[in-house]
Length: 309
Image (cartoon, one colour):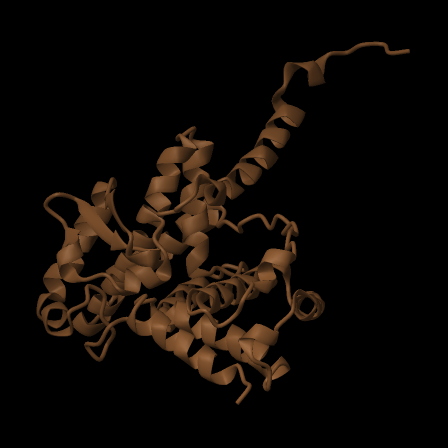
């Protein structure tokens, strides 16, 4: 029987149990490949032609943003590489087409430092004013979450997945397991953040031990991505901040602030856990906008009074 369903399911099984890809990547593969299957349900892998792929990709460009299209094409390329490996086709049709397109540069959104300071100040005000132990502990956890996001630039998924043994408060380090199971170790450089984390750990010691994760929710379970978003939104409202803040913006603010402080981009790359410096270089565009502002307002030539022809 001619179909793509069985070989695609076999490939997804291979990705899960042999390549051991994480659930997030598997979910993206399932979405992308089932979309492809819906277009060619009764076509064998060997019958897919370069022209069919070109038509499919052109249709993707009509429906999605370049970044999403790029991901979907990568999913397809990986699938056809598997088909090639399993001898399900004589020639990989991707070898016959060129897929090159430039993604528009979307500058990462950062949190203005004055707004970030207001947010943190509001959290600490709430902590000092807390009238019950339960409320005090809850705000202590919220403060630790937000401070660690900004102190390390880690992803929200990395923060929620932190194990208690990954944070060494004596050594002042955090061991982070990033994308592709890559490890990186970051120093906690601020003494106030370190004291806060120690206080959080002391107050939640048993719950952390029972849960197996460093950050826990009110039910003693692992803190979720959605819970972190709610925490940020809660204090944004309390601080009367008219500015939408997402967890990932702490990461962007961390990187941009270090770049503006003349930290070598290669160090920033390692701290962010980027596999390629090309990914980190997005922050140089932010730095260039600052550079433009400086040169337009601070350069002495701007203050010369000259009579020009």
